[in-house]
Image 1 (tube, rainbow, N blue to C red):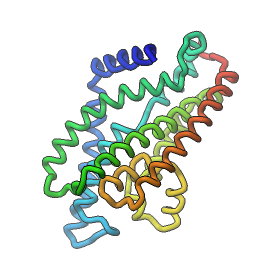
Image 2 (tube, one colour):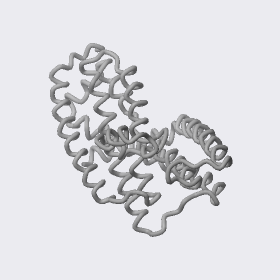
Image 3 (tube, one colour):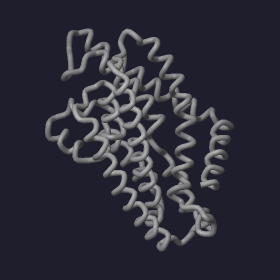
Image 4 (cartoon, rainbow, N blue to C red):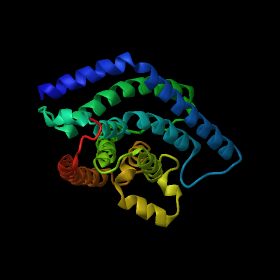
Length: 262
């Protein structure tokens, strides 16, 4: 564990040194969410309502979505894919580091740093919208929400790592990454709450694990999730199954690895 703790510390210091891009990314997401909030406010001012969502619920939904995007969703596949393509992945073959655990620690340190920054931004935004924010009625909901974020963060990392190791077989994964990212956002409820879609789409989304990234944690916070414990168990099963598949895929990928960039 000592070597992974060292990796965590080094990447944390790197995040502190290059904090500018992280801040710019957060500002970009904040602008996107601000446009959505303006849109929903205009819709509700005309007396409209969607599903069982009050205006305060939707405002809370998108403020939380802004925070979850930064704290949960992973983007390590870019660097992982580049290392496989340029041959620097060979370092993992001669060092006592498991690539899966190494990138998990890298992702964790980066997300903790980004999470601290987004908490400040989210706190300021929430204070400005305090009269339009839905607050949980008890502390248990907050504990459930934190647990759902942890499970969602692990799942998000696993999905992103799976995209990254596709570089063992594909020369370029960037276009595939974009396609999967937008599809995942849609099925995770990043654009619109899943229960506002047609029933058939809802059934499909409930069968897939992507809802645990964004939609499920927010539903827990809004106290609209009827069976959170069952959701935690399902998410845990997905995490274990995908972990096993990733270990298998990683072993097969290393056998196929040619280090063409070296």
